[in-house]
Length: 178
Image 1 (cartoon, helix red, strand yellow):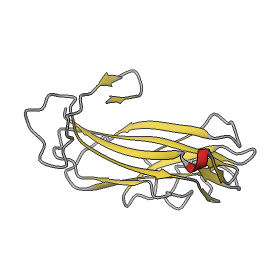
Image 2 (cartoon, helix red, strand yellow; image 1 turned 90 degrees about the vertical axis):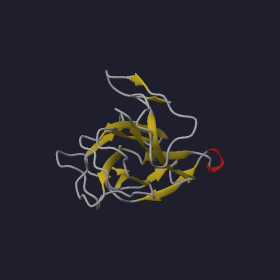
Image 3 (cartoon, one colour; image 1 turned 30 degrees about the vertical axis):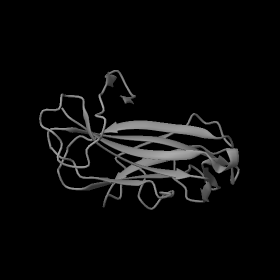
């Protein structure tokens, strides 16, 4: 599996059967020891706004659409990455905005937007690395919305689905042996 992003691009090996617990300490560095993912297929809409300003997005803005993943890391020395591939569109004159939250946090830990093309299906993608790793279960949630009042359509455009509702948005969390 290949994780994308930034100047520190690196290949990582994924075992034939990803672990759901009790990873091997003999695994080489770069091995994905755990992978948890959720996917939303088919369109849905929200009128939730995530303002495009200098303040961090909050957990009351936009909608999560069920894009939440829980991960219990096996080792604090490992690295945890969160990757999103989010499909959707905002109405005319608006931008798509996404924000990533940790459980219990009211402020986003990272966020982004598209390039300003409106009323067309856009793919918003990100890769984020956790700065600290705990062995406690952590929930990661993505919230999406438009930057102005109007309808944001997940997995579609203009309040409708595309491709017979086969468009999907995915949130994946990886634990990688350091």
